[in-house]
Image (tube, rainbow, N blue to C red; front, side):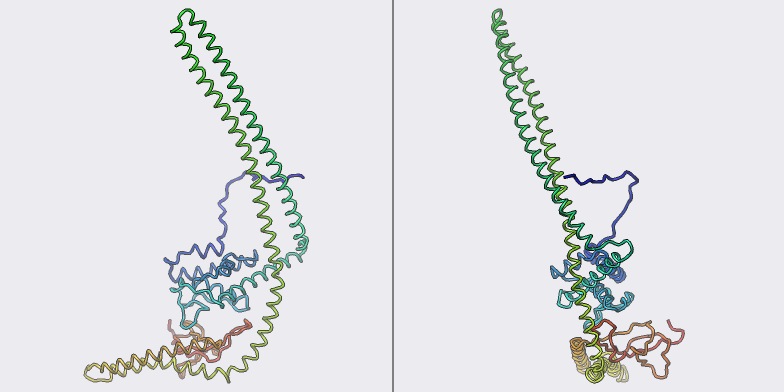
Length: 453
């Protein structure tokens, strides 16, 4: 079988090409202990764009896969970025990262950007959000592949799959052939090295014996004239000669064995490299097969979304009769706790003339009542969340919207103006069809004065 040609890199100027970091690298490389609100906002945008790019271009995201498999917790900024991406895939517009609080995380109270590093525990809602984002991103990726295949000159995915299988089979057969040939050559090289080493040792021993015999004969001839002096000189010559020859033979043997071992290791490394390349191509083929299988799951998700839209239309008709009074009671309690308590405190602390201090018992009773009402307000809001409702707090500087806001200032025309402050939050109903949440009760706000900041 012919070997697969490997293209060698062409010479040229070195380029400093730095690949874009993945979503997983962005998340774990972000130093949360030195982050402020601005850096969390930037991290929110970059992480959201990176997850979207990986899902739509590659069909998978390692950050989402590891979070689903290991059920790990996520930072507030990262979780909000994934929720915003889920909202976009559901048909909503991306959230404004310029808000003071982190979008999509107004649970019991608003979570501001300074708390972007707090960990959100893995829950069923997080699991559903991550699963929906992964499936929607894969659907986008599959649609892009279909569009590319349907375009002029596009390749048929089935043909691509068949070519991939054929390439994998060829590479596997080539790897097996190379591995077998390398094993045969390695065994032959080792056997030859052993034989050569044995021959070298035998030759060295024979040569050493010849040298010793010659030296002994020479020593015997010299001993006839001067036996003691000749014997000492002969022994010295023999020892020196044997030492030099042994060093020379040992050096030659070591060099031969070293060269043969290097050749064997080179052949073994070549087989390992081909095997690693084959494993990489096999993994790419497996990922492509998984993305193709997810297409059927995406179709089922579309049917489920259509069902939720019809259910939402039916639920909207029940809002005024079922949950409208609950939302109004929440606003009344919020006004008592957060607005009218200021008036009560002013009455207690300034009602006494002459600078006299109020009764400590009256102050303690007022603070206890305020804590009790605040606790009940939080529980009330948590109960609303269980019904699919949530409180929204308009930000200062937002444009007045008659569908979502109600002007607190009497005699002021709010049309075309901006909000100065939120007095009482409004209540919205979460929409299951992704077409936008419904306003049950608008928020009470004040309007900026003419020429205000």
